[in-house]
Length: 252
Image (cartoon, rainbow, N blue to C red; front, side, top):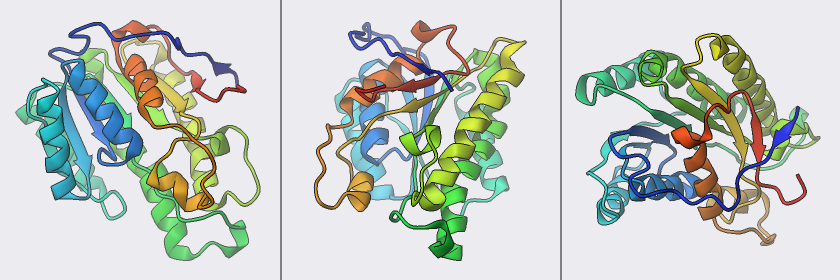
């Protein structure tokens, strides 16, 4: 799978996402929160999905402080969400906002590195639900809105999705499948040319999720650099990129 370069020196222009609606899942996590704030500074109307209502409300305060409109908050636990829940979310978007220009799948579930033979049933189900089934179902139901606005879908990947490795557990399996799904979907949508689908490996970030696997404090930078790259991929300035695997790893 070819890995494509991102414009490291790119800076968003004022009002880049003005009048655009962007949905971010995992909005109160490291990358999700950083991306939400980056989109807010670019003027987007945000829809923030996450499990914790209080954290969503605090993030909305920061979004408005950045000069963006008040975000639409959508409490949702992806691990327990059903097909009908994703359909309802898409219907709410259409009914309340009338459009969707960008969809960023930043939510992730990871417990620890382990052999596949040791994976517990619940961890397997929850990991594939949050990291694969939820992104599929939500994209599937939002696709008509995205087609109408010639929108962009961004799946957040990982090195484990590009180079399958031992002991990456259910998380690695889900990320490999996510990469394949993104490639297939980009090919299927290519002829119409309205919706772009890309993946981004943000490289190691100093987030709570990473600290689960690297408790020793392996060095990593904050999520702001990855958020800037994700913002570019969500914006029209990244056209016509689709079906591409982007990476921020220094060695990529």
